[in-house]
Figure 1: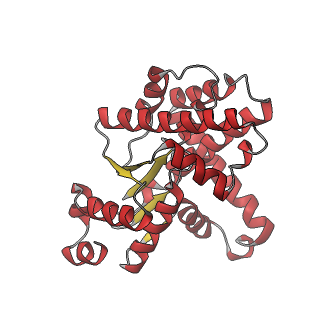
Figure 2 (figure 1 turned 120 degrees about the horizontal axis):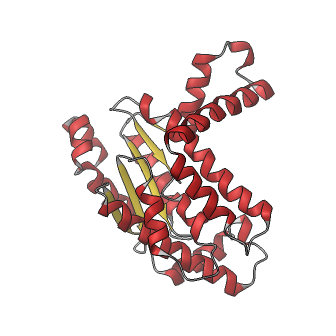
Length: 258
């Protein structure tokens, strides 16, 4: 079961994802990240002598590159959309636009490597999946956001079992972002640029969530303005109510988790 998070800057998405993993571990669920499962694939494919250190990093990159190539063959229109969207951000320097596309392509490799090999009773929790990548691809724009462009991107994504859309008031998110330290590529920007990106990130997240819902993909929306404990309790209850969770996990698991 693949669960990924989507949310604007400062929404508390990463904290909620971490709390979900902790709840799953406490209930003794088989939970992993895509990176962990990719390393398992690597360990199965390579002899022990090169599973560590620099050789392991090189082999891991080579394995992921192969999955990225296969993803591109299966989803050429999506890859082109991501490349085009990243390169159209003319207000950003070239190195920044390339990083945005690289982040998309990194996650694309996970989608090709992991979902087809995850047993139904294993849960994969993804902080930032391809739906979330829409924020970097579109929120940096210094023009009005194009809802149709975002919807077209979402419609071409591979379907996932469940997306968690994390929401919170923009002012609260701005305060959280400044208190914890701004994301690396926002540091040094003027307050107006920071605020515009944060506001855009939340608008893109909502548009992406609506696009996912309109195409029939399950989405749970969580208001994360009431505190982490209340949010994670609400989220866990809603997850146990999804048809996919009830299909694959016994009542014992459901009770332990909720």
